[in-house]
Amino acid sequence: MDFLMSGLAACGACVFTNPLEVVKTRMQLQGELQAPGTYQRHYRNVFHAFITIGKVDGLAALQKGLAPALLYQFLMNGIRLGTYGLAEAGGYLHTAEGTHSPARSAAAGAMAGVMGAYLGSPIYMGMFQALTKIGQKHGLVGLWRGALGGLPRVIVGSSTQLCTFSSTKDLLSQWEIFPPQSWKLALAAAMMSGIAVVLAMAPFDVACTRLYNQPTDAQGKGLMYRGILDALLQTARTEGIFGMYKGIGASYFRLGPHTILSLFFWDQLRSLYYTDTK
Picture 1: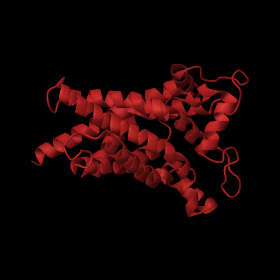
Picture 2: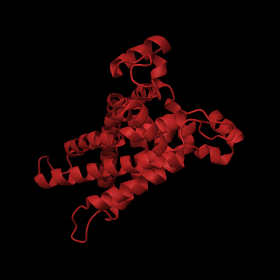
Picture 3: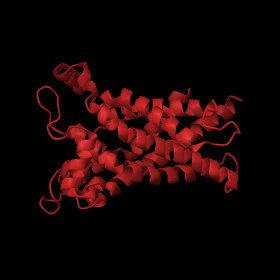
């Protein structure tokens, strides 16, 4: 049941944040490996990107890829949050004295993130017809192209997100700022987690987006980057340190609300379920 609730929570958040994912991806690919000032900027900022995409491609373009995104979120975050929830319910995130352990929380978040992201990687690559084409062209292994490159991003993001959420929630409970089991407690913790995860993931997010979108040769090997480290180094060398944070505004508007909504929905669904089953 933990996996089902986790998947539903992530899908609920995805419906609201998918347009932000579209904007973020387009901004990150803008001026790829070109020095600042040498290319035309189609999108000046997040809001300009929203308006431009809506005008040029139509409003439906802002929900492009929603179906595979929902499937990916249900599978990836269903496994990730479900696994973390089981670890939390089993008491593995606490010390022998019963206090919350940030180190254990971060480790559990990282492991859960790896499991969810690796199993969900084929869905991230595309859906149904795309999966068939990829399988025919590159074989079964092609369905996981870029998966290993994305794992550092997932490890950093998942451990930061879940550790910050659990630690903040535990700290706020100790301070008794909100009533016990209040929805405000989960919301405040999710908001702190949203800020932390965006700062930690932004460089990896840029590199991962470019790895998945780079052209490939006949064997499916990337033509621009050898891996996530190479993508980070090339981006920093060509576009400067700020190139690694390209689209961070869009990243926050996407990852921030998605983190807040998914963790909030997840916490509330689990709270309702465990309250009703007692």
